[in-house]
Length: 219
Image (tube, rainbow, N blue to C red; front, side, top):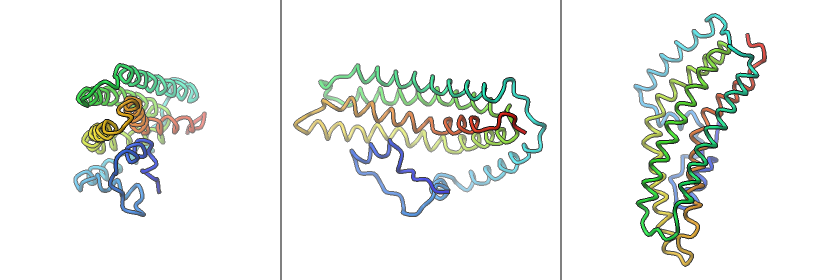
């Protein structure tokens, strides 16, 4: 499986403002993910995979509602959470002005918004997994795998994503030294956070898409 991580809108934005370390050419997603997974994590993942495989032999799930209704519900939940967080980001961006001469306020708000995203999306992701686990053994497998991957990757995300604020600080200083000054920085800051929001939502979006593609009468 190959997937161009650099196609992320957040990566494109940040790399356009400040040079980022390039990945080794030819590495696929599994190889890049391997850089994040320790030997201890790998052992845990292997054990989890063996356990997850037994879910196909479990009794068929009994969804409380038809598959289409469940898919519609989680899709609406995804839109609601994204809209709420996007409005919060926009509200904070609108409260800032080009007269701000220190990045400290941006940094404080950036970290707070990241915490808001992390909490809201974690709750949403768990709810979607619970829905999938009631639909079919196949989706129950996917939900279980996603839960394991979240445990492995979340600490890396929590360490890495806050560095976007540091990169935005460099952009802030870069713009302040130009003739145009900071007039457009608040909008760039908002775009970076919206891009991060979409990046954080990708796992949930994948789960929702899997449910949408599930047969109406899963076996």
